[in-house]
Image (cartoon, rainbow, N blue to C red):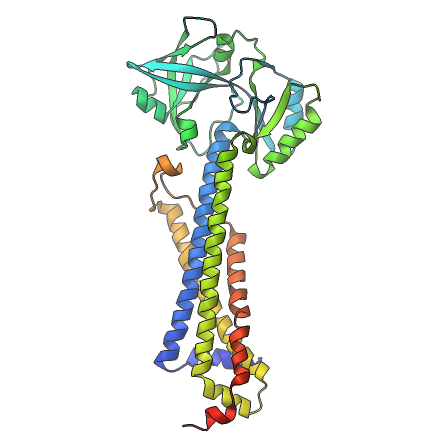
Length: 410
């Protein structure tokens, strides 16, 4: 066994004195708290970002193929002809899971003496209902040969209308140039809830064929296609692939990722990374200062040991390695304890959801946690490496210790 590590291990296992014991325990606890805070922060912020993105993607999809410059309103009065060849080409792109046509049209819903403006999203049976969203009642039944006379309202809109699943509502569609709205009756098949105000306050779902009839469109006329992926990190790549490989130059269509359509939402989510970086830097600095101070205190406290080892002929580098070994043991103990605390709190939140949030502000009623193991390993390795590397400067103090001076007393 390496002599320096042997002495360091013996010192850690058999250190005597209340002062040294207190300093070592304090160092381990401080390191553990730094690691725990970093793990908790990364887990909670990663979970928050992932949950918000998934709610957005599950309703709106990852990529839209629509008329150019229609990304803002999407409720265009100009139809797009459905193209089965384009759909098949898009479905063959790696990471694409489904391609669904949609129509978005503004409407007013009326029931129980209450009225609410909303955007109806017309879908067909190929639409995958929102993952991560709760649904009471049922989804739209598309078996009707004409069109389904059912709608799915958001919980927010249903509460304002005092409506529930099974109720009948009236839909008013205002057409340009007409003084009278077109009215359709529909039954509320179900009520969904995502927690995102951008969706819950705005959208409801209906049969795409209903909106085709209201718009006097043909059976293959749509507003565009919604493309769903198995991973949102490929959104920009798939959007570019569709645009450059499957949409002719003369085509009125273009492809947009959700990042293009809702840049403010995704810029806000990316800003959360800044908070994580700031917190990680602060915790790292705290850990470095803590370990540097502890090692310096231990070297001063064990100056006689250093002098004795020098007098016995042990090189200064070996003596320095003893204290670096002590720092490594303290750092490793802190990392292990920090993982137990940090991962314990994260797993407890996943199981119980004991930390509650305001859904109207954060888009979720419970703090979401997502544990990414490579991030945890990176935190552990970086913390341990920093703790050991930052010891080199205090360890230089060993060269200034004179055996004659520290051994002449006592």
